[in-house]
Image (cartoon, rainbow, N blue to C red; front, side, top):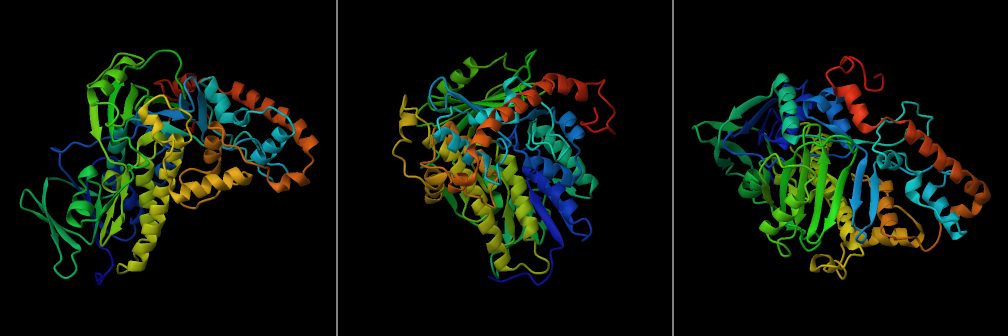
Length: 515
């Protein structure tokens, strides 16, 4: 593989959705002192998919990096707060569990809490792991409070994310990017010119006759994958044998009065699952399904019948294939968002993968010429990121006890990816939660799933044998009570929003903690 002889002096980003403007705002910040020219080209005639109305906590780090304050983000994107996801009917009909963004309890003598809890169960105690999570306790009563700034507080160590309007978020990022010098071109791309010597992308041919050359190209063109797929022919790996959902229908509904849940609801249905996401100005609703098990008309009827309030728009249909590009970085092109792959939005990872892809690009950004070893290392890391998310999503289906429809029965004898089988086996043996560097979900998220679906270790970690379990068993009710007390002191989520984001809210120079 040949390499350009000089450092990257110019970047062209293709696509003006959330992925494109995330890339523009982030790279403008990253390269602010290097004088790199950044251009974003998009066509007003081509719409964006607009997936992503919810997030995981990593979005806080990204927003801080690009200079978007939490107050401006929430206000400008009609956002609300998210403590996690409530999963209804996933284990079986009538079941419900909560996936919080945070850990459980406290370690005892440096032994993780869940090991101690498992040992107490072996000794006969009937204990529910969820009782030892502050986010779960707050979510149960629709309350919200940000983590305590006091690092000594055991009740302050949890994360939170957001629900928001992805279109408005993209507009916020666009303003940040443009103010940092990113140039925007509104034009349709009609061709891609490649260098004869090695096939790397040389320039984009625009419909207006202009030619847009660059050293590095970022493909954010959605499922079209104009550069990474069509021009560079990077193969797409199909994961539908594990994740068979291939369609989605979404429709917003009017906001409801009263309670404002600080969480997403994901409900398992006969041929997939539905989401409900509360924003300030509307409720996002959708049905992700397998077209082999239900058609679009029936799925739409099912969704419309379940809306919590009247619809305020027409149903929007989306087709997809779960999977990823064999390489997210090929030659001098990096693919972000739908151009690089798609994992169904069960755990709100679409925008997160855009941001993680940008983090990977920055970590391996060439100082001078492109180095194939850097590109290979970046691809290995981002592949691990995507495969770990894939495995986490598969676990939701495989571990379910549902067998009431053909959709759910197909998971009973499904052969799992070896990486997921190994992870499950490690936990079932002795409660070991494998740490991964490139993993959007921490060990406690995996613990939540194992626990919720009834996957229990065969034995406790041997370190608990050196702990005074009588002291542990006396402490467990105290931890549970402290969490319940802390949750009761938090305001209702609706009150928190009204206090901080109504027209009468405190001035923007105050933090939310001061409000």
